[in-house]
Structure formats: C-alpha cells, structure tokens
Image 1 (cartoon, rainbow, N blue to C red):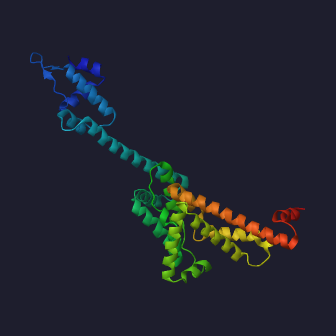
Image 2 (cartoon, helix red, strand yellow):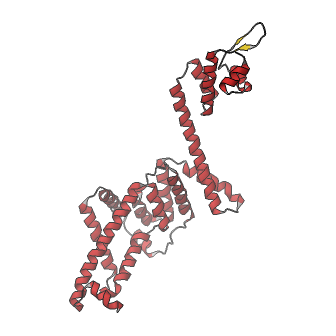
Image 3 (cartoon, rainbow, N blue to C red):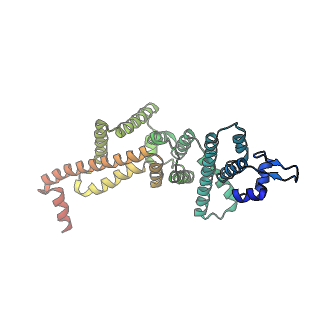
Length: 323
C-alpha cells in the first residue's frame, strides 16, 4: 500500500511517516517499477505503536531502542514515567514560585531574580539540608544558649519531606518567615537569663527535652505527668502574689505567652511546621491536652482555697462577680 493509504489508516501525516522512516523506525520496500514506497501491514502496526508512544511523550531515541530490541517496552515506560514525574515536579515548583511572587505584588524588579533563585534553591534542598537550614536560621535569630535551647525544641521535627503541593507551599512560607526575622534583642531578659546557664547544663536540658518529646509521642504516662506538673509549677510561680482569684486569669495569659512565645517566630512558624511534619502536629495536640489538664488541676486547687476563704466554690465565686 502507498503512503496515502498508510496515512489514512494510522492517522499520521505523510511528513511524520517519512520522518519515522528517516529515523530508521520503519523500512518500507521500494517498488522498482515506479520507485514508490510499498508499506506492509507490519509497517502499519509499527507506525500505530510509534504514534501512540509519541502521544505519551516517549522520545524517538527510546522508540529506536525498542524497535531494535535493545530495550523492553516496560523499561521504556518506567524510565519515561520517572522523567515525566520530574518534569511535573519542576513545573509545580515553578508554579509555586510564581504564585509566591505574585502574592507579594513585587514591584522591585531588581530583586525578583534574587527571590527566584532563593526560592528555587530552598525547594531543592535535601532532607539533611532542610534540617540544617531551619536550625541555622533559628540560631541566627536566637543566638547563644537561648538559640541552642530553642533549636533543641524542634530538632526531633526537622526531618522535612516535601511530597505534596501543600507542603511545598508551607515550606516556601516557612523560609520567608525565617528570612524576614531580625535577630533577638541582646537586652531581652529571658534570653540573657538563659544565656547565663552553663554549657553542660544546656546540653543536659536539650537532651532531656528531646527525650521528653519522643516519650510524649510514644504515650509515656510518666513523662506526661512530669510535663503537666512542670506547667503547674510555672503557673504557680508566676502567680505568686497570693491573690489567687484576682491574678488567676493574668497568670494563665502570662504562662501561655511564655510557653508559646519563647523564641517562637510568630504563630505561622508553628502552623507551617505542623503541615511539614506529622509528628510535630501530634506533639502540639498532646501539648495542648496536657496544658488544659494542668489548668483544670489548678482550677480545682484554687476552688478549694477560695471555698476555704469565702465559703464558695470557684464557679460560684465567678458567678457572684457577674452579679
């Protein structure tokens, strides 16, 4: 059959058929009488296969290896799938970077190049490099022993695998948060106090905190109780004026701020890390549960004290305040 018939049967253009022939993918015979190419049913089968493989972006060089018998179809499709996945990942990264820049409404055109490079580089960091990046950023923001203690609070949760778009977006946001934070003021009282602690003590505290985190995640009840009692002790220490009923709410606020703002670069840091690490999300949920338990225990204790003084329970006391 001639090329016109082949084109009609395969849906390929004459130019495409001639191109595949020039690449050695088919070898039609030539009619010596008229010098026309004569295509066989086998050529039709090959051309249909070639056309199908090109539709799914399998390159000509791979199809040549298939036709020559150097490589199997399954291997070719697996290799192509890897390349397609890589291309999709790169396009998704590009999309995230573009969205990030658009959302910022960047008008400083001279800084766009630096921003693109920065975002691209951080997305392509390895697992170990991501962990190092976050640790170094936190130590920069919170230098000295204070930074060491703070970083230790997150080290168990810095194994960040970015395997979906939500995580990619959260990672870019986290990088942006860390990049835009200034270093902690040297005059910060809490930081100065912690920085005065000896290195041996710092190392002990860091190791204990990390072990406690792991134990809490594993459901260790002894660690959970110790953690709760530490919270209770801290709230009591803050609320040391003795005016229990007057300072109770203020003490809760102060203690909550202390627990959640010691070196923490804004609430967004927590939120992004929860998306990036499932263990950290579980840990924060456990932390909230224990904190609520601690508050309830203190409420019960205060209720008994108030009842002894006024003959009222804590609930009745607050009800009377509303009247």
